[in-house]
Image 1 (cartoon, protein in one colour):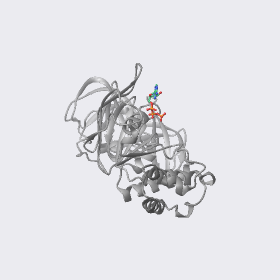
Image 2 (cartoon, rainbow, N blue to C red):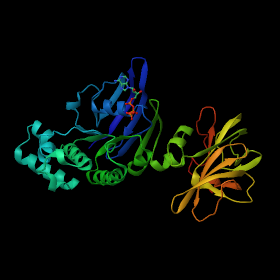
Image 3 (cartoon, rainbow, N blue to C red):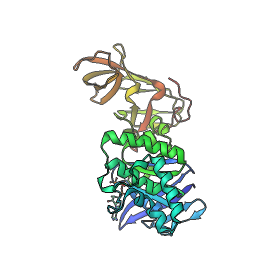
Image 4 (cartoon, rainbow, N blue to C red):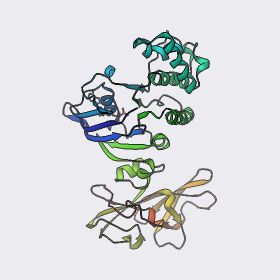
Amino acid sequence: MAEIRIEHLHKAFGDFAAVRDSTFSVRDGDFFCLLGPSGCGKTTTLRMIAGLELPTSGRILLGDEDVTFKRASQRDIAFVFQLFALYPHMNVRANIAYPLRSQGMLRHDVQTRVEEAARILRIQHLLDRSVSGLSSGDRQRVALGRAIVREPMAFLLDEPLGALDTEFREVMCGELRALHDRLKATTVYVTHDQLEAMAMADTIALMNRGVIEQLGTPQDIYDRPASMFVADFIGSPPMSFLPFRGSVVPGDRSVRVDSVDIALPEVREGSADTELVLGVRPEHIELSDDAPLRAEVVDAEYMGTTQIVTLNTATGTSMKARIQAHIHVRPGESTGLKFRPGQLSLFDGVSGRALRTALHDGDAHG
Ligand code: ATP
């Protein structure tokens, strides 16, 4: 297995830059997710790592080797795509064995590797079946078998669960992560599904319009979003934004929003008389009759142990709170909002960038 290093990678299609000056490393053995909305450049990045697309500029290193100009077949990398084409006329065994046969590996060694891959994926019982009769989940396991049998330095997976139905995707997410933990294989996984990325990744690179907006652990990205784009993309329901005009200076521990002082993690970076935005995750809002920041309950969606309450503040901002299901709320009633101070984010409303606070330095309380 090996580290993958991407240095100033750029890809233009005509005048359009699909990937812009991207620099990041995938640690040896990391489960690394490229996450982002449709068209943000995830697949283009992955295809360049695979050797299926030539970068306009920049370098790709696999281990210590510069593979930027090597063909896909010369890179010790295996990939699995959403609609992986298995050979319909071959059985499962022959499909998995195919990459080894084409390398000229001895029949006995091929057999051993195929049995081992099938055992890891728990598809031994399917080895002599035709692939055409298999369920989509089993077909994807065969595709994964074909990738792992090669024992490559890295795996590239592009939305490999995209064709599966929701229930089965959850099962396969767990299986893929368990498979990764066994093989400890450097893996780059492309998805637009934040829940999938949050559940599986060691590291997430969240992309927006060809640029990595934030790179970090799922928890970093959830708790300390670097921008409003990240805060909005991650989390279900996403972070609520409360816009206001004001100034902050380093050392401030509160802001004034709609004439109400709201405590927040100590500000470490100032901004004078500008559009600011307070960011609050749904689980950090409490409904409290005596809180001065008022809102009207719009509706409540029952989720089992919790409910998602949609609220409208006096200035017409819509917010979502996740509260215990047993708390009684009625549409139309007025309530007060309390926020957990140590968990609030503050953004520059013009650039969308997060202003640095004690939350980012890891010493916030509340
Ligand atoms: P999706 O999940 O929809 O595939 P993505 O994040 O993987 O999205 P890419 O497939 O990398 O996005 O595409 C990034 C942008 O580059 C898109 O706007 C796409 O239309 C454009 N693009 C990709 N390949 C080409 C190409 N061969 N020629 C021209 N434009 C392309």
